Length: 230
View 1 (cartoon, rainbow, N blue to C red):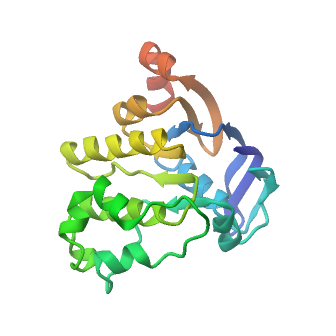
View 2 (view 1 turned 180 degrees about the horizontal axis):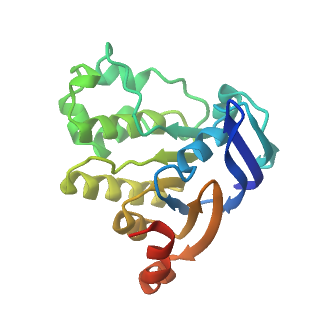
């Protein structure tokens, strides 16, 4: 579904990504792991077209999208859930959910989103930013599920959440895989990532330095610790 080759990117002349290459097969959950500043979030922003200062090859479902605008990439079926969640503060939960356009068939209905996240139904009339951190994360994920996108880019969905909410988000991501979604997940919570993903790429200073299966993650603790400094 996605192939990235020799992706370079930066900000104001400062290089952040240096020849990043990886791939995702349809229906996989794949994580990008690494310390803060490794380039994980920048990679997602490049894929979604938010960073203009880049070069390399980004093939999404047979289309080379490296020079596409974000709205063009979104119409092809890619959706991005940022770490800061991007909730519209003046809109209600319901308005936040219904704001994005439907780009293709197969997006979840409101009822299906509410089934995944019952809290959102209970808070549907509440202002988006008055929700708890966990509820805001549910809203941010639920919003992109309505668009019909099939490749989801999730940036640190477990960040700052209570363990019980992290567990709920994990169950939701697993349920999305069962529905046929492909997910690229940026994470620092190794346990959360290992329980969900099929494969893991490790990033250091703007490069992919390792690729591990779940079995290798479980059995190669020292290898992971060496990369992540834990």
